[in-house]
Length: 372
Image 1: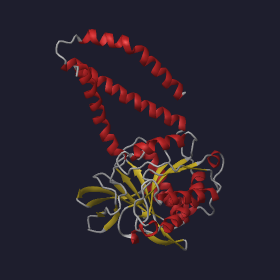
Image 2: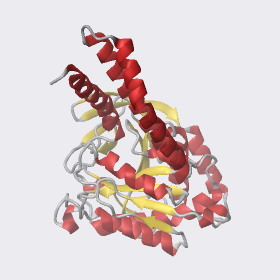
Image 3: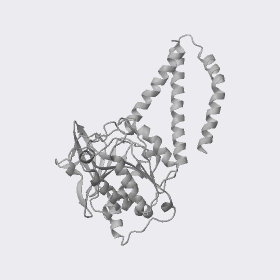
Image 4: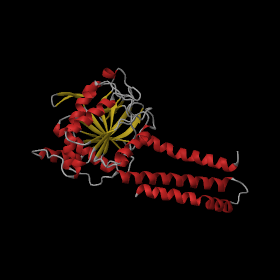
């Protein structure tokens, strides 16, 4: 093998090594695995919440009661959380929505734009009714997503429901589902929801009677490692406050997790957990139907200030690709210059520049066409 070929291979390995941490922060392969149970305790030893998602120091929880916690430490399956204080912005929203005598209907531009729904983990299922906690490519979560879409349609909302499978259930699932999310964004949705179920064992943790219906509660998840985290969180707070005004106790909490969950694509992108794998699926369907009752009115009340269209999402994707390509090129140049004895680096790079400049110019021209 020539040294030049070796340099190229090592450069590609370096690029892969750079991308692996990004894959880990997109959403771990351990998310929503049935039978994983992490318990969160406050400073007094009181149970705050449970999740199958692996917690990390810095994760945060905003309860439906307005308490804000931050994970201080994690040891095995136990997370210790510290009370940050009352979540004032959220409590102000609760007060505002409680003051409304009537619920306005969604109007104007927001009423015309669709709501998008898809699933990253398409194997997720509900053991009591599906017969398994995981059914690759055909999980029971599809029925929950379809029910959500139907309920939104009943509210006269245009729905984009995508049933693309993104299995296997691993760390790359969010990369595969990102392609789906970007396709959905081309239709300029007002919001996009990635619907999951949790993996904790206790069915009673989510089971409730809400608005005279037997339901599972919903958890909203926001990724804290994405540039739109603040606007995603604002949307989650509004949905938590307004959803629980419409149907008290329907929404359990907001979990602010390490990761991005493709929420960098849209200010109104959220991950929903509809119960856990030990709940009956019809309970999750009941719960998400009630949630659908709140979504259109909420969007009509508070249009997001910084939505991003599908075209803008495409620009972001191409910028990311160009950034990674630049890193690869720099890595290759550095390796060649520093590790190949006797090479006239200046002469070599000049030849490569002249050889590949036309190709690069053509590539950039194609990118410009795509993002216009």
